[in-house]
View 1 (cartoon, protein in one colour):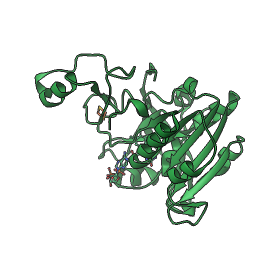
View 2 (tube, protein in one colour; view 1 turned 90 degrees about the horizontal axis):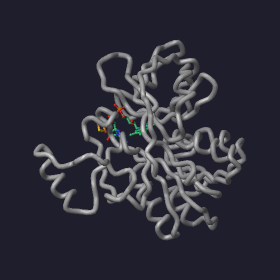
View 3 (cartoon, protein in one colour; view 1 turned 45 degrees about the horizontal axis):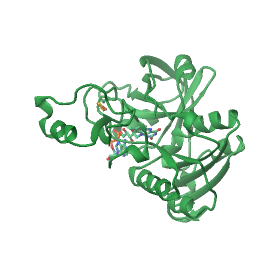
View 4 (tube, protein in one colour; view 1 turned 90 degrees about the vertical axis):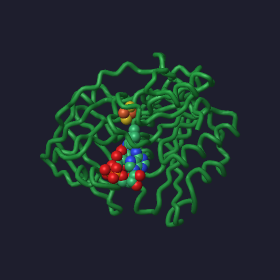
Length: 284
Ligand SMILES: Cc1cc2nc3c(=O)[nH]c(=O)nc-3n(C[C@H](O)[C@H](O)[C@H](O)COP(=O)(O)OP(=O)(O)OC[C@H]3O[C@@H](n4cnc5c(N)ncnc54)[C@H](O)[C@@H]3O)c2cc1C
Ligand code: FES
């Protein structure tokens, strides 16, 4: 996958609208003209909780249009709670746009988009790009329960077919979205997915069995989010275009660096070289 040259900067944004779904997922609309202009599908932002006491947290850019973007938040801990509590008029600093995003050129004619939970946040911009360029796509979307399925209509409005799965069977297929994808008869040229790691591993396995490729947007706990701390690494093929090209060996790294230099893999930073990787280049 191509590495993108990005020039992230800190942007002061303002909350212009706020939606909360029945299941507690919050969608913050933000006035953020520069990010809206620059962001590419699959890129993310580091959002700084405004209280000033907590580290920034990674969030996919869900929508981007005119001078506005939006972020989709599932509250899982203190930082996402603080961000989800922001009301209209509040200021929010975002470091963005970050990461490589999806390789849209490589998403050919017929794409299966696979989203788990708030992984959906990284799927709307690719869907818009694909349909605008005349390509076909189908969304496979899984959530824990019917109430946690959000905004399917935004995909349907693009002319994209949507198949849903819920863990508890309250809507659509009863089970994981990857089982739904596996059972579905449609042959897709390529898969693109965002969601929890077990889901992404399953998508990678399905792609391998079908003899197609899959782009996976990995989720990891980021510390710095800008490639400085090496706290978010994943092993990838040394021959991957995403393999870091600078010397890896240093005394501070002995264990990892020696193992990596003697092998066919290297460590890539999910926040910097990713978060999107080809599944067949991951060594996980
Ligand atoms: C590139 C990227 C894009 C993301 N996009 C979104 C998004 O659009 N919307 C969204 O709601 N979340 C997204 N996340 C996940 C989000 O960053 C974490 O949920 C958040 O950092 C948790 O912070 P917290 O302080 O609220 O919770 P914490 O106290 O840090 O964690 C609470 C719980 O969530 C788990 N957790 C923490 N971080 C992650 C993670 N990255 N992935 C999976 N589980 C995690 C922890 O293990 C713990 O169980 C994204 C993550 C990455 C790396
Ligand atoms: S989180 Fe620091 S290098 Fe990725």
